Length: 192
Image 1 (cartoon, rainbow, N blue to C red):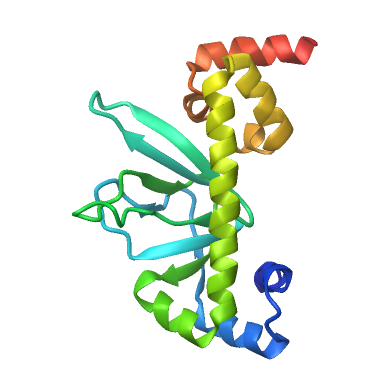
Image 2: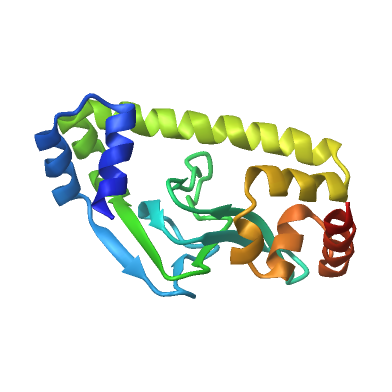
């Protein structure tokens, strides 16, 4: 699993092999069982993650008690809660492992120290955040302007692996439709 981390660091930094090994020794890589809650809605985050293997669901429970899925994180995606604007710093989301997962775990309290020792690590993190933010902006703009069937087709194009990895009711929530609508759309699209 460390190989994936090294490949990622090589892609976005010019850190030497020795520096990469030092960083890998300081950042824990942990395994989590399917169903593990990494962060619960309302808790204050103390960690961030980078997915080496697995699928993590981000969701919230609305005022009617309904779970609303807002994202899925899979291999080579970073998970971080940006809530510095909130006075209480609590998370609006729950993050749960949908599969057995292997994650790089960053302790937010140690982040500044790591960045001061390895300034390229901070640059790499910034690049990751910028890329992710750009992708989220594009997906949101497309989501708002598209029909449910267009959203499903975009999922097939951009993240087809989710179809086999995520329960249908969670995928439907993510796409902004009911599970029944998703079933009809899947049948219609598979016929085309």
